[in-house]
Image (cartoon, rainbow, N blue to C red):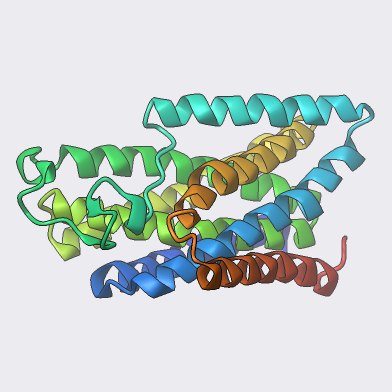
Length: 266
């Protein structure tokens, strides 16, 4: 397949797969599944960042410090964006729309009943922007080689599922119907395809941007894993839960390592 075909396929398949899985989690409240997925997503993100995108960025750069500075700046940018509620992540058990003690949907008397859907819309706007950036990062990875694109897509899909599940809950608590919540999340996920296709044509003319984009991709994965996902695991400090979390993180890392060996570099 051509590089553009890979980008389109990964963007569409990733968006549809993460959306369907998120809908199952949100509508059926499979909280145990979500906890498992969050731990796995951490491993997938860290594995993709440290085993694939960062090594590729270093390989493309003549000055390693350029890569580390890009990652550092990227982490700061994502922190600022999150503060501005543009880079918004919401995972069911730690979302403002939920009772953190019980991990279930908040009753209809929460503030979302009275905000006329503003909370849900704000989350969708932020996640649309996030999905668009994910598409750019996927395209940059595929334009280096197919193997890097595949493992980057796997990592992004893994962390999109708990994020979109949280979005469903926010929308439902903001007064949207299940049908409308699904449609809004579907439209938001299509931004990944738009970002990927636009980046493909842009990077053909400006391929010097590929290396810094790989640095930003690494920064994104590290930031999401360390700032957004890992803190939610600390809410279960029991030894059995910790062992399960570590095992699933290692499984996520192993998946990325295995995919990197199955699909050789171009």
